[in-house]
Image 1 (cartoon, one colour):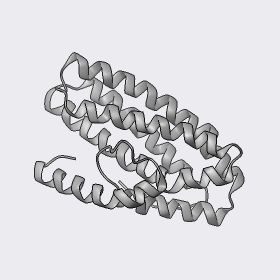
Image 2: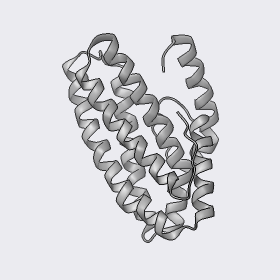
Image 3: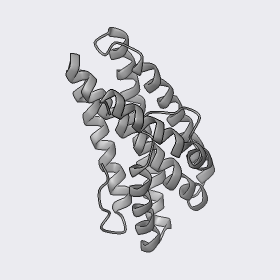
Image 4: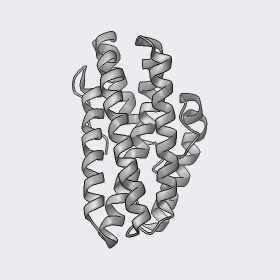
Length: 185
């Protein structure tokens, strides 16, 4: 799912593009049923997991240090991400065609859309204002690398840069092995 970052601002464009893909996957999942719904949900879950891991490792720490009120902005986003991971984990245990799954997925969709809007306005736009071209290019490459080795499933409680660095590689290895064995993700 990695995309080559070609210009200074493409790190944020790349992440905004993923936000758009995430919104599309929510819609596709809600429209589908049976095996197709399961397939689109697994794609959604995987994209959310790698996307959030990359943000937690690369984008949020930089924003925390570089943008006005960075601690507060990032702290709120991390809380939202932890809640989303919990809901995703709960959804994995439900029948994809159940009323409960659909209801929780709609609530998650709405929360994720609001979260993405806040990131784009309060974090990404501010990073583009505060960072120079070289730093934005570096972040783009770092996001690509982080996504390439990120866990493919949600892991609530692993929202900090340090927690991702410590637990992430093991979680990613376990997730990817589980995906291969189950033929999913």
